Image 1 (cartoon, rainbow, N blue to C red):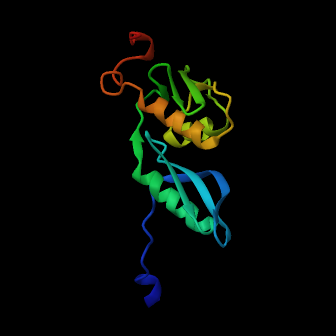
Image 2: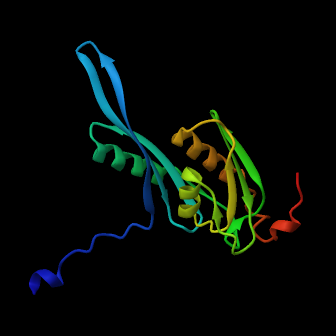
Image 3: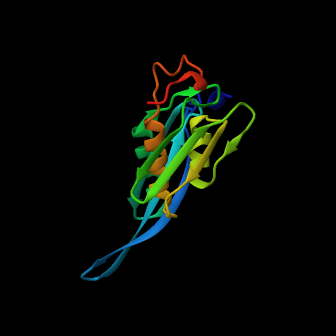
Length: 168
């Protein structure tokens, strides 16, 4: 009874994280090949905050934990209006090109792969997306999606409907 009363509760983390990619990387040294793991993690609170983290570690657990910490450190705010983005946006990172379009309510998340995971963790429920670049690199696709979400106009666009925003 005494132990139950004074047991400390672990603080609940407000961010949900998801592992996007895990790769074994090699560094060749004089003594031979040294293997490490590279983890790409996305963390978000499903309420407009999202971040991507990349880290390497000796084993998988260390790489994932470091990448999660990196994702929480590199958070951005996404302007969401009625469960969608406020205007069409595209971005490029490396060879990856991503196009994001707002959708009407009830249309759902029409996105694949990395873009779907990022939009889900950001809290975007209605969006249409397309990866235009010829790359399967999940890290570059994630960085391009984050760059596109950063390009969204936030302060004045939050109060306007997506149809009334002028194209500039």
